[in-house]
Image (tube, rainbow, N blue to C red; front, top):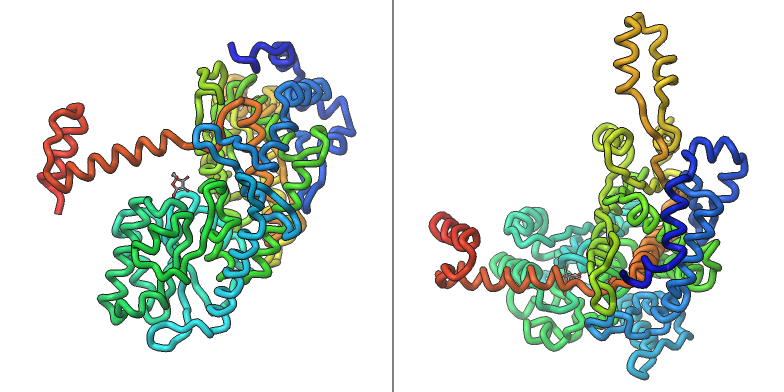
Length: 545
Ligand SMILES: O=P(O)(O)OC[C@H]1O[C@](O)(CO)[C@@H](O)[C@@H]1O
């Protein structure tokens, strides 16, 4: 057994959760529950009262956090300690939102000035493009950005630009290409004009197959449609930590925006990887996004555990995964602009906490990262919410909603809110057999039929949810919200004693994919592989065009 499961708090939590009353009773017994189990920070409000917890549960969870030295681990991350032990790297996405006056050392060197220099370079570039000083090869101004990247070099910029649609510069459009499937880039290139398109190639490593292939295809398209080699610098820029490789690839040295190995891919939107965001919403709004995240950083670093939003959310995730065997967690955004957020949190959490050994290499004896999924409210209510309400699996949920809409229109927002709050209420209270029978009493059905239908209408309730509200979706509240989930992910990893910052499983997929590619391209014999891989390779060779 690892340290975590050996602790007396762990056993106490196991015993306590067994006998905790239904949430309906907890609400009936305590009219102050909402006041006591909610908090505001950084422009966000968290209602965590609809969780399977009473004051004793919370005390036990906070004890567990203390026993696992959570606060020391948080400080270690912010101070630049090498907490990514398998890649021997510091984890400092928080340095990307630091004040210019701060000093954060990596290998004895203050990294804040480099961050500021890169932000200044971004600001100048954004200004040149958006004011029209930056011209395409025929002297026209840029109208379209095509962002090429994958994973963290794609999802962050995509989801944030989507979320900040009301703040877009009206004269620019943005398109994202990630998948190596040619259909993806082909469809995007159909929409744009080479004279007025700027390609932003984002790859921390500058070695990711999908991104390199898509960039080469974009370059070929550009050259085949009027551009020349000499015009490339006006239409292609790169963001990477591998400046040498980008230069070797043909990127103009002035058009390369640096990033660093202490920024993880899935935590990189705050770096120059966020260039498409800055181009679309302007550098001031990009800075406001950083400022919102910084506020959450300070809250996470300084607030006591008991009033610390990411800590509370991370502890609940552990509670459900380890003491209620929840295998997944759903994120439901009651805001159209936030429709992409579940996919972003999915990558953030699952690539970070999909691990099964501790930092010292021991096999974990407990569940770690759950499946993160979700979608846009109210659409999901007419689809998968059924399983959340009455399925056999426990699925804790986060509901996220701004109080004010960017598009106030008739009764839309009040209806949206009624759905959001109604869902959390239904999940919490459920419906008893007696209540279902009472509802059916005037149905005209026989007593036997009523009893049968009532059984199908019973909802156990006691289904946990957090509700996160903000006044309005702004660059700043969005920054705080994303940083909240980054830190929640950190809290879980720290409690589970795993490395949330490497991704060896993904790396193996990349290596084997490259090996298969060689066999497919060179007709190299694959008979020494397993019969399935060999059979699939042969089938592709025989049939593809
Ligand atoms: O930015 P790069 O180096 O092209 O990598 C893309 C993505 O690949 C991963 O390494 C693995 O999917 C992510 O962490 C990263 O965001």
